[in-house]
Length: 431
Image (cartoon, rainbow, N blue to C red; front, side, top):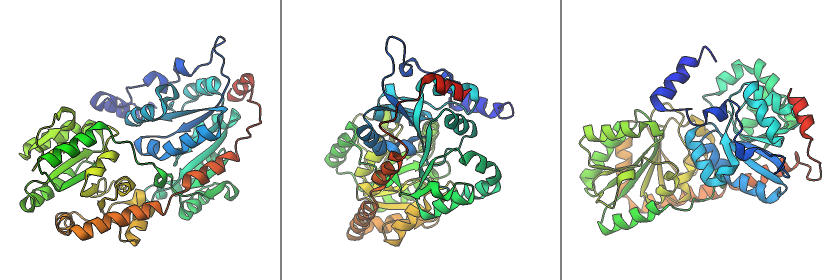
């Protein structure tokens, strides 16, 4: 903690990261979570941890199914990032969401004493050594759902497998996305009998209810005869200049084209707005848009949680984090809307999803040099563009069912007729 303190201070001061919920991260349990003598806790607790927006979206359907399947339990959700926290509170209710504590015993123990979770569900690969040890010692069962080990993380996991083995022994069940993820988990210490392949929860994410901005934009674009629409989502540093240059080429053939540009990280909204001004690109910020014409320009999405629904407006969707070596982002969201998808060739974090879509000719993968020409070709051929989007939607639907399989696995860890562990026992174990 001391060695990394300068980094955390820099993040807090420059970007405001980790400032929100600081007391909660340090072990101060929010009052809304604590049972008192006057209002004792009568329901058992399931604690679900989803790091950020992507994980929150992935577990949304699972959380709803757990609430229906385990009515005697209260399902609580934690996140690490502020954007994940905001989305989780909208999805699950503020009273059921809080920040994940830092991985120190003094921060974790107060939560285990107050909540006494019967089951802890970790999304993907959140292996925090103190948390795993203390949660296991408290009597909670622990499951890792949607488990995966990306190509980028794999070398590090292999290098530190000697340490990981000591942590993974505390996990009761691993529900992996693919057979390859299952094999990788076992190679770093997960017991074979505790690993199952249940598929990717992200294929089961329900199409979000569109916020009002979607219909407002749809109506405005139609009235002014704007289009085609290019939605560029989850873009990262180094991608916007390339995309905007490509958009200039698109405007030569389609003068009334519109780009909806959604940077991945909120702290970059102002930076991208300045870039648009420097390039002389006509633009509006979503937070200030009041129906003004957008034809031939860019709408900068400086909001959280709306991108998935905004893909519905796209003729072509570009999914970012992929033109530069950042591992890519989820292409399932535009596929839900039957939209033609283009992504870069750095998609290591979603290798299996992208490979599946590629095998079914349901995505276009490009490098920096190919991007402008590919966008022009896809926009020029209406028939092939619609077919590309249709194949993407069909591919996504063919992979559903992970939520039901994951829920079945979790049911093996929960005995509905088991009495809750007494608080004194939890406290004793935690200590």
